[in-house]
Image (cartoon, rainbow, N blue to C red; front, side):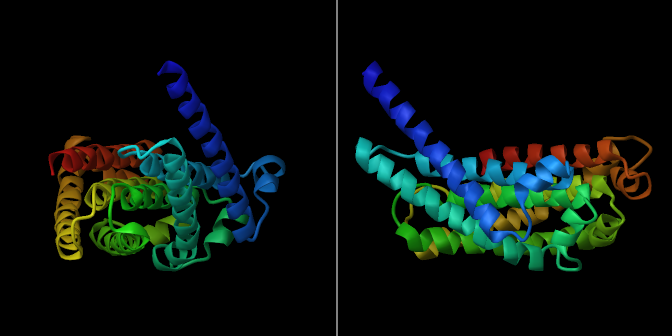
Length: 278
């Protein structure tokens, strides 16, 4: 049994190394700049931050495909490999949509490459990881097949876009304007809130497929709860964390990176609790 377990572990680790290289190649093929050049010669921290989110997303997708009951060693290898590749395709395919829908008021590539905008890099980190978590939830569980994976992934992406609109509306500042001002704190806070939402969505999309009506209804209920709960927590904790001041004001006026991390952390903490309770 020990030898069998070690063999399985080595096989899946080797598989993830291969998938990691595939993820790297896909990313390099689809973007209009050279990753290695930006990371080494240019020392572009904004691109490095975005890539960290991308690689974490690929790991989340692999874990989502890996979880679940075993069907046999070779069957598991085929299933995990196939669904992981599907998740990577969805992850890379979502890049254009998210760029145009979430950060729609400026050119992301220009901000990352020419301006080296770390705030935009932080948002990309959040978007990639959020997308990876949603994909992980969509491909986990049994039943439904590829169709349910794609449907719930698309629903999750639409949820991110809608939440970004609500977030910007309720913020004491315009997130796009602050990002153009290279306000890194605002990008960290925004990216963290997107990750927080994706944790709830991942929980809603994961599990075995029962029926389209029941699963989509449950997904929408989870979304409504998250759309109400996370903004309320943000407003309440905004003034409780720093007594006599506001995290939002610190982010907007002082570009306080610590405040940005605090808002992101609080949002993720409460999202994890909400996902466990639901």
